[in-house]
Amino acid sequence: MRAEDLKRRLASGEEIDLIDVREKEEYEKGPHIPGTRNVPMGQVFLDAHEGTLPKGKKIVTICRTGGRCEIVARELKQKGYDIEHLEGGIDAWQNG
Image 1 (cartoon, one colour):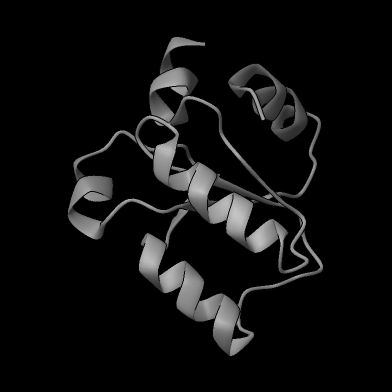
Image 2 (cartoon, rainbow, N blue to C red; image 1 turned 180 degrees about the vertical axis):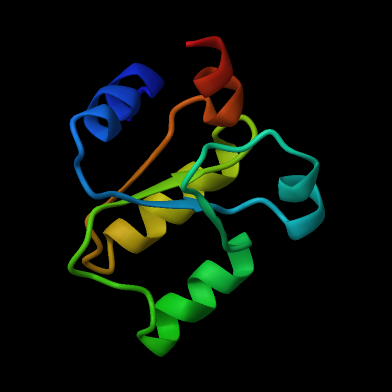
């Protein structure tokens, strides 16, 4: 999902679970999108395996430049999640 599309959907009030998959230290240094929850990449896969990641809600994964969040989204989409990644990551969000 492109940054401008995510901004538009969030502005319209659409409920999207925003998951930033960066490590805690990287996330805390910022920047990050308001309303995002930090769940490091490895933990997202663990949560999905344990069944604690919700399948009934739209998820958008986020990282710094889009690489890690794309991997997470691709893998979890194959497992039946309604999930996309933020193309270009937080960098695209800030510049878009």
